[in-house]
Length: 261
Image 1 (cartoon, rainbow, N blue to C red):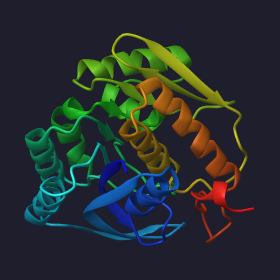
Image 2 (cartoon, one colour; image 1 turned 180 degrees about the horizontal axis):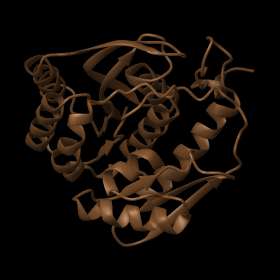
Image 3 (tube, rainbow, N blue to C red; image 1 turned 45 degrees about the horizontal axis):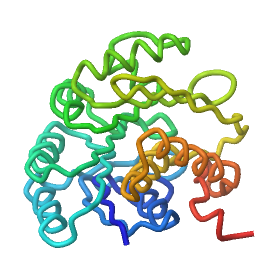
Image 4 (cartoon, rainbow, N blue to C red; image 1 turned 120 degrees about the vertical axis):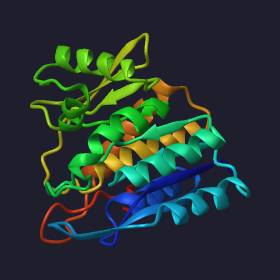
């Protein structure tokens, strides 16, 4: 069985973060492992508090995984502080996995911040350069590329600017744009677009985590990057279409929708 590792924060309400990543990997036939970098007290409506794990324990978790079950691909999600970012970057540089998919999580679906404002500079200069693929949404891409994104052409320019910072490839997610949901992938040479009909629902908690971990799962299975992105987008679209009306805010997507009526 192929394996994948998620390095991210936890979501006690089960819809995003480590929990979403492991559900996604399991749904796609991958043995998922986790390194928790932050414990987040959150639900579908708000983030109450965040407690970062110590850099030593983050490093020890990564060592524990790589010395025993070497992952075929790695997904990195929420890294709230410079210390978290520096530790994860140092250890992944040491172990040099083939695929590193980084979702630069800055905000929860409800708008609550998940990254310290002072950490964005560290993200750009330390984390982005190790990414095989970076998967920002439009607001995150605007921060990283330092520009406004209003059109598909803007997405192309932003993706090129981000690869110039060191990422090997960039997928800018179009969920915040109007109209159909179009994502743009730039692999350093070619540009691909992936469009699915927008689903009108408020229940989209954890969609970014789910997409990036699905891409990671397909890369672990040996898919080429464009095909991995295409299949992951189809999977997350199905998860949104079957989203669960749970909680008082943005409900979670349904990671196991293929297995339920």
